[in-house]
Image (tube, rainbow, N blue to C red; front, side, top):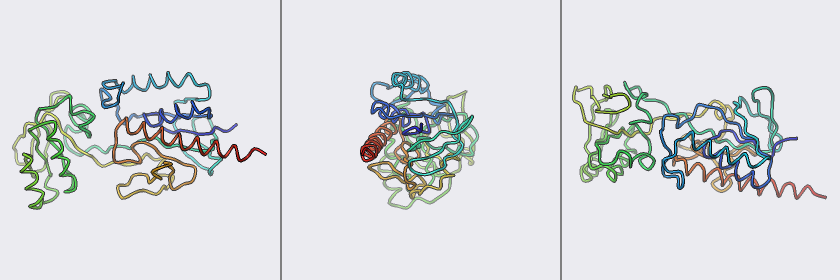
Length: 301
């Protein structure tokens, strides 16, 4: 008997989708395998009732709650391939295949580490993407932001809400036009154009940023939006992508360009946070439940 929905990815989006569909009495398979995108993070923040919860504890609680629904099956397995069509998808998993009427992709994105000495070791500990998720814990300390192109400069100004000491590093990658420079100066954001040579650290604690000029800028928290890429499974499906390279979905249903395959969470949104991914998972589940139930009803003689 096929599953109604196969969910690939067991983070906040996938877990929330599984919960909503389970409570709607749909037969669900949740496939989860590492590595976790937020594996380096110590706590989940800005998630009401779960603020400060370690990511693994968050997942454990969610799985314990899913266990109350016998129609939801969780497997720690990698999905190597998805084939077939709407109503009859086949998932290649360890030990065989699974068949599902619909598929929801909740696999997130892969963050590419910048080629800066010390970057990977500090990722998730002193280097972050989201100040809403991690800013409070390092508030009022000297902050830095690596802007990879001019469109990112506004983010450095926004960081001033958490720290009065913010430096934006352009890495010499582009020139700042007079209007943007005036905006940064008015906000009290300093600009460093010299490329970053290395990050000076003690364990997981960031002490400063050493520039190619030899200067050292005292920085204790560094923010950056590194390049991201899709996992191999998503790339193999040849789904339509938006201008940012994210999976393009219908904003109401969360359906992708491939009928019957849906996407929720970080792989389909530039606004990437646990609570937003969970909301998208619930949204996709609700629309899927409506569609599947209507489909069953129309099949009744």
